[in-house]
Length: 167
Image 1 (cartoon, one colour):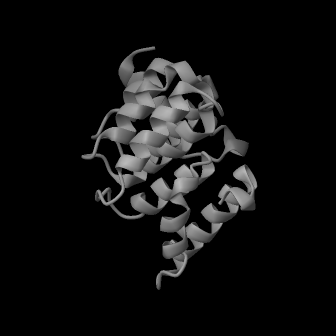
Image 2: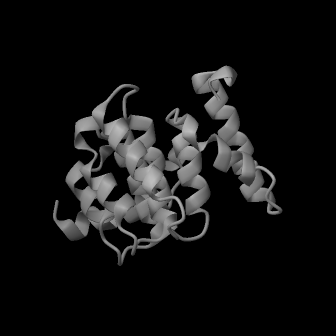
Image 3: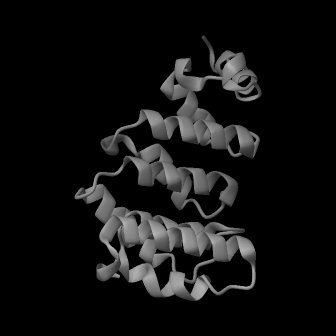
C-alpha cells in the first residue's frame, strides 16, 4: 500500500466510530508516524493517530511522540495527546520517566498554547513529581473552571500516586 493509500485509509478510519470499523490498530506503524508528523494533516486526525501510537509504541520507541511533544510550532491539540501517550508508556523507575519529568519541569512559564500549561502540570502529577504540588494548589483556586478542575484532578492523581503525606 502506498503512502497516499495509507493516508486515505487513516482518514477514513478516524472518521468512523470503533463500532463501525474506526480502528487504527490495523494501520502500519510507519504510516501512523508519518501522519503524526505531517503538520498539513488535520489536527484531529493527527491526535487520533498519536493516541494509537501511544498504545503501540514501547518505552524505547517514544521518539516519534517526543518529537511532536517538544515541537513548539505544533498545536496543543496534538502536543497534549503526545504528552498523555508518553506519560502512559513510561515506566515508574525508568530513565525515560526521569527525562520526561525534567523536561516538563523546564516548561514552567513557557507558553505552549491553550491548555498546554495545565496539562504539563497534570502530567507531572501523574508521574509522581511532588514538586508540582504548589503550582497545582495555586491553580486549584483559578477563576477558570477548566483550569481549576484540571488542577484538582491532578492533585488527586498525585495523592493517589505518592500518598497524601508525601505531598
